Length: 252
Image 1 (cartoon, helix red, strand yellow):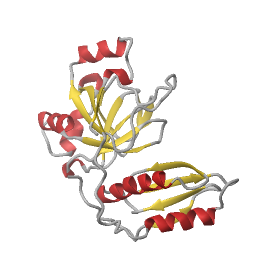
Image 2: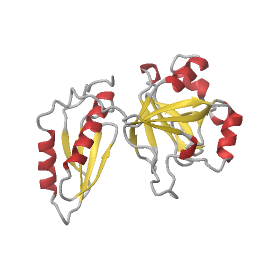
Image 3: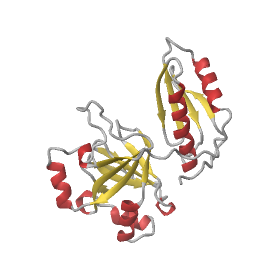
């Protein structure tokens, strides 16, 4: 069962964000409980269907609610969100169960994951133990952002709670799997990163040519299936490179 919330700051807080948004913050630092609260509250806001609602975006420890200024004023939005927050102990909510499970093939180590040994050492593990953790831990999409469709996945066991690097890796390719602070990020685009690059996948979390360009959703479960470098190269070169290389199982 997902962990209950253990919030690390007075919560929840409602904060103005630009001219047309409100942030509902459950913690100053991300933790499993704050993320559970953000996931549950975002669903509650979506279900409320309040007038002028444009977008609801949960993140690691907060929820952004965007609204249409032509239809509703910020004070009204804050009042409606405050009412939704009442009556629930947000320190004692369970994360909603995933409704979909993705199995994503990935290769680890070598040229497509050159920092796997370094990451394993940071966690106090052997390479084999690190690979077992990365491929057997059911992860959840905690947030999508930084780049379109890009998922932050977690949480790995506590031993993976090591910091980012002190310097940037100039660039990792699209599909790179990078780790830090008990999380895995699957890069949607080539990018610089301070996280350690441990693996690679042909799965693409952002496909602008598709009707639905974002295959992953907040709360989805993700598991990585280890494949060989040869298998990865074949997937990358295939006509179906993208979301089609992964298997999505509907759970409910």
